[in-house]
Image 1: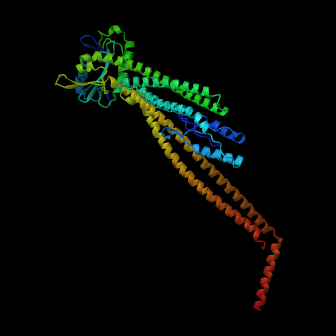
Image 2 (image 1 turned 180 degrees about the vertical axis):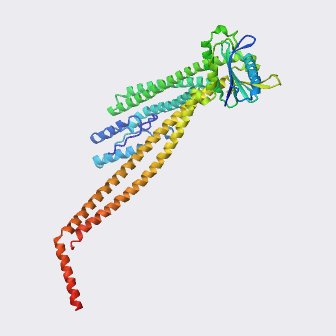
Image 3 (image 1 turned 30 degrees about the vertical axis):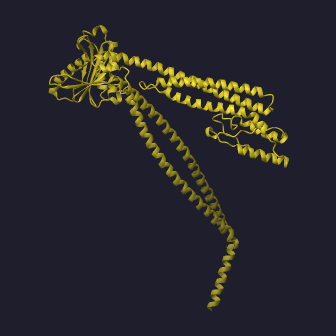
Length: 198
Length: 347
């Protein structure tokens, strides 16, 4: 489950304007990287142009999925991930990123911005953090921890059952012991009382 | 006299005295003092629509036995006149009870229908119809109970004190049942209006976004903005030539995203609930095992006691053996005897 790119664009009336992008191209060979990056930029811009305001969509292309979310104020984000990455996490990520971006960067800069002029540095960190969807997304984390806890509890239940069996064993042994000691006591008492001869 | 309590009534059928069960036993008591009191025997009961057990025969046998015990060969007074007097009261009350249970059933159906929160599957016509019917029924029942009350009041002078209390109690219980049903009905209506409001807001949400994406989509989708197809997604493939003619498929997933999140939250909630139950079971099992531990404790203590006592017994024995002067004499005696025998027999 990998994320390949995370980009923020502004959807103008005719074309989309790339504001900032982060790429994780470690899985591609060195010579392919530049062309892949270009391709991703182009794809993101194209998708943003084709999508409408206030919509979320996922576009499947070869073995990649492009998730796009365009807000009502023309700000859009595109995440390119592989097929296994859960789409819900992508959209949550896009929501968060776009929120923060809109707070940090002035909306005046949007229509005319470019990666060089826009001051927003968190994209890389987000991309890195969300490489592992389990840890990054709150809901997935909670779900994963709950599952873990359930497994631990199941193990506990089993140990408890074993403990129960052992306790039953102990009860029987202690009963046996008690009976033997009683017999011992009786014999000892008999010793004392009956053999007055000696 | 055995004072078995009759089970609480689920419907107020008056064939059997299910309402005021307490007053029946009070009725039996005064049999001893004033056998002139007419015990109102119920008319033959229509058991097909009852939801509680009919123990009339037991009651009658108890009465007979009591009377026989008290008054020797005293025969039971004919109570037909009382039966005829009260028969129409019981009939009316029975009718009311039956209607009440029917209306209850309809109200339950209405509740189930009104609680459905699905956006597309709304049976509005049915719900409205049912609401109207239930309202009519409630009004009818109201009128009937008012009539019954009039009847009771008109006959009050003729009947004895017990009968009065009895009839009044029955009327009061019917009224209280009707009141509870009306309050249930009101709450159901409130739930329904709440749901309608929610549905409306959701529909508005969807209809706005669908209108904006209409440029992409088929006209059919435009026409059925609130379409009955619960899948709600239009799969549309768009052929775009990029570089070397790649195929892309555009899937409108707005609905599914929200549903996804809702599903995840539900899953989390169910998991948490399950965890809670597992913890509870755990605690229960530990508590059960505590008893076993107590038994082991008791057994081991028992053993210790026994061993201690036995130890003391043996000590006593040892002391007796070691201090017994008699023993020494006895040993010497035996030795000497043996010695004599040996010497005498050998020589």
